[in-house]
Length: 199
Image 1: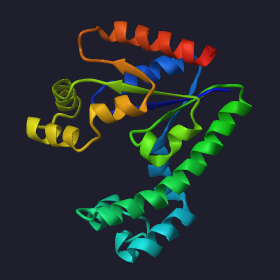
Image 2: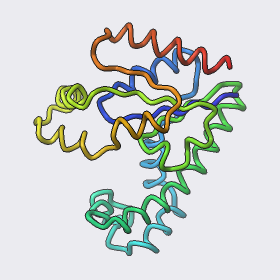
Image 3: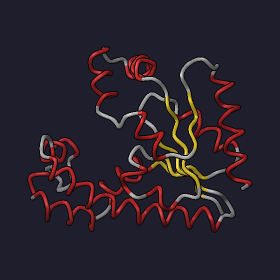
């Protein structure tokens, strides 16, 4: 069984690459979805967050509130580091479980995560690929996808890791700079993933 890690900044075109993996029968695991599900359902994660940040991060139903959690870590690098240390531990354990589930089904798996490198999830992968696009291209895609202003889309794009970070940490790169049609980019992704799954 192979595990492929997929990462890259928002607006680069990861969705197209992930669809290519699904076409190949690979079980795609979205780390962001895993985190949000754990936040809603995991009592141990909730307890660990309350221990670090206090009950003010909970809503009236006693569930972690993402906005309150965001406010608790905003502008405090140490608090953000602590939040990541807590959440990554739980997310990585769940990724292990889901990869094991895929293996039991006789399938390869792919982990889709923006923080694939920083969280340690990349270490679980047999290969890691980044989907990249120039910042201006990404800004236009984010604006079109979410109906937001240029300035807001730009601030979102600039808040993420640089292209150089991904290129230095990912052995494989899919460039999606807009010079290829979506169909051409999909074919390029399929070719790379077939190669990685066969190695």
